[in-house]
Structure formats: structure tokens, C-alpha cells
Image 1 (cartoon, rainbow, N blue to C red):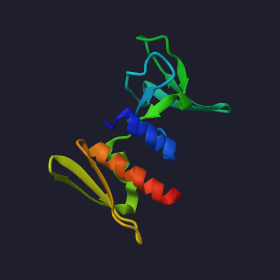
Image 2: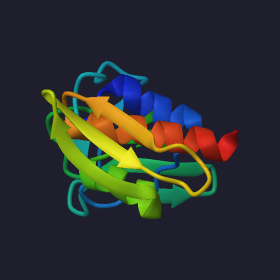
Image 3: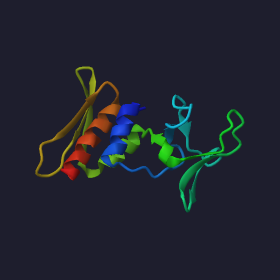
Image 4: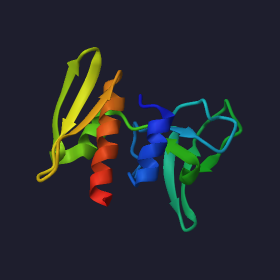
Length: 136
């Protein structure tokens, strides 16, 4: 799982989340910041309302938690989701010198390389650089 810092950096760089079953997230604006939740069609569902989208906690007995605005959450994308977000720019994932190295390539630019101890973090770092190319 990627670090909260990388998840925030991706969000702040403009990577948008479209919640789906199986996605993991944290609640940032309550006392549950250390808990990781998973979107599930049976327990945690996204509900669209005229005032925004919310996560509804169906049948949750552990906490007095009915719903939370998605804007108060932090998406923790999985490795496969990060790879998908790299799209056609993704070239490879290799292990070198004790690190995972993700390489991406966009025509007319130098290769993008993300290096980290965890493969998901390496994907996230490469994605941040790719988003930076698109913005810059």
C-alpha cells in the first residue's frame, strides 16, 4: 500500500478517484485517520447526492459512523491501479539494487523513473512525474 504522503501528492497533482468496490481509503477529518477502509457493495458504498458524494457505512456496528463526504477521504490506490493510470506510458517494473524501479516513456521526453522499496510507491513516484509532464 502506498504511503499517505504519496497518496496526498497524487491527489494534489490532480489524480482523480472514481470509487469502486475494493478501493482502500482513510478518513482524514475524523479520529479515524489511522484506519484503512475498503469500499464494498455490502458495507461501504458511495452515494451520489446533489451536495456531493458520500460514503455510507451500512451495518457498521463498531463505530457511530453513518457517512462521510468523499472529500474528507484519502484514496490509497493499489499497485494495479497505479500501473493502469500510467497507461501506455508504462514500460517496465524491475528489481535493481534492492529497489523496485518503474520506467515509463512518453514520446519526445526522457524516460520517467520511479524508485522505491515498495513497488506501489515506485509506480506512484513515476505517475507523479508523468502528471508533472502533462501539466508542465
